[in-house]
Amino acid sequence: MQGGSPRDLPAPQSWRLTDADGATVTYDVTKPVLVVAVKANCDGCRPFYRDELTGLENVDVVVVTREFAEEFRDAVRPVYVAPELLDALVVRWPPLCVMVAADPARVVAEVVPFGVKHVVEELERLGAL
Image (cartoon, rainbow, N blue to C red; front, top):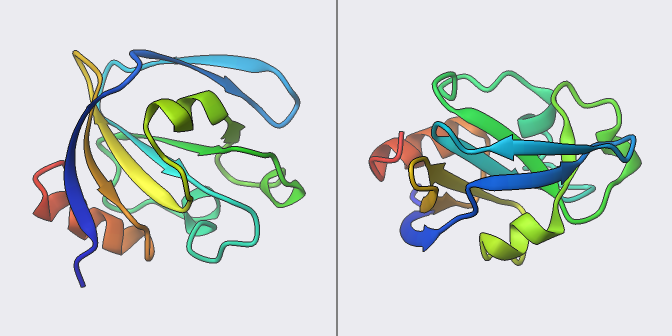
């Protein structure tokens, strides 16, 4: 099953993210990073903040949402609130994975996630991993 597509879009080099406690975190793009846009009550989203991310060990993974939901509180990796980042990456409807290359930061691919394995396969097919 295919579902990814290449993209070429400038991305911010530095991101402001808000964690579950309301603290602001700054993320600087210094290596490839997969931005995973999630929403509440999304079965396809949960593996990205609850499970192992086999195949994504060589990239950073940043999970973001427009609005915080209680189900994100006990995630194994943080889910950050970052509506400005989602706007800058032109992510209108989660779930969506966006691969951002570094130096300079650029969106190079996007994939609608049907599980971690699917995202890895699509990013490899697109040459983004």
